Image (cartoon, rainbow, N blue to C red; front, top):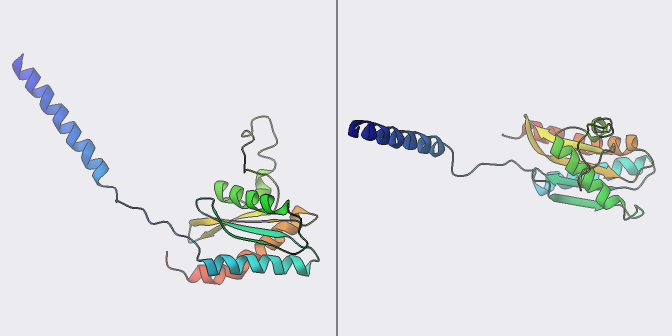
Length: 169
């Protein structure tokens, strides 16, 4: 009986050491890639410029991987309402790592996710990725059509695509 208790105790001790070593293998910190302010600003300004060419004034928001706004620009005549909508589009694209246009049908049917504050299924939000790494999202709001919003968001991403391709990840 005493031998079984010792064996059982030894097994528990060994199991706890193995469990601890599994946790010890993880790094103390985790590096998270983010766009620089210059790159985020360059993308936002390119989106505004594209929309101006199309005759519309919009708001553009870029969020980082944590969903926090990094750059927010609103053109002179864009309505105030475009600010939270552009943010929600960027946040949604980043959260789902997919263009918001693709979420419209996913969120309309009975089995869709519930309504969550900050999540919007409207065209005009795109994830920002490079080398398989999610960096954030860009959202545009204010054009009469989500198609135009998305076209402007793509122009923003295209403005930094070469820089992202050259970045070290």
